[in-house]
Amino acid sequence: MISLQTSIIQGSASFLVDEDGLTESQMEAYLQTRLEGFLVSSAKCFPRHPNRDQIMSLLRSFQVGDKVVYPNHGIGVVDQIATRTDGFQVQRFYMLTIKSSSLKVMVPCTNANSVGLRSVVHQEEVDRIFSFLGDDNCTSNADWKERYREHCEKMKAGSLMEVAEVMKSLLVLNQRKTPGYREQKMLERARYLLVNEIAQATGANETVVDEKLLLALSEAGLKFPDIVGEA
Image 1 (spheres, rainbow, N blue to C red):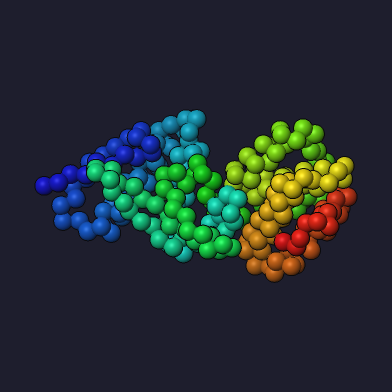
Image 2 (cartoon, rainbow, N blue to C red):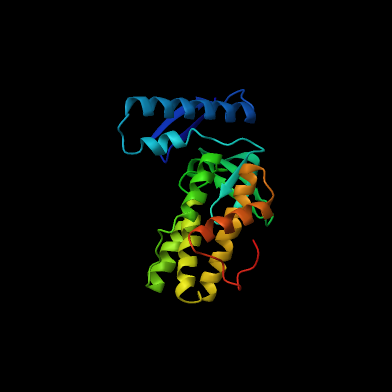
């Protein structure tokens, strides 16, 4: 009789299951059930634990067919949830296809939160973003290296609001001087990511979303430079 040991949450806990007679799909379902039960128990036992939010976020698992957002690449679709073994270690992966580029991405399920994989934003977040874009309170770091580093970190973080912050910061910069080539490309990318996800979230046409984006920015006295193409 063969036993299989699987580490849960980066080795913080483990359990043994008897795989004799279990099919691959049954094993996968069993592991998912045990994982969710462990996370719920941990959250209840340690309500003030510093990693509680991270633990609970792992419960928001994705299913095949779900639309998800992969940081700095945009919306993708979960094509498959694969289970792979390496000796005694079992790991589950989200197999994604990024819609804009057809890029194939494999994300370990246990790392989904840390890499910023998330669901498409809801209407409440869309409203917050447009409100932020229309507010004239925004600054841009004068130091090029610091500004570029901050913007790169925000683009990789996964939050659509942070993408909006990058775009608005670069447009504030554009009022003083023309952005360099790399910042121009980042501005284009931020605009695309915003328009694409908001269109998916609201069911609106991308052209309509882009026009609404321009209108909100105009309320803050901002506009895109001519060198930046359409989203």
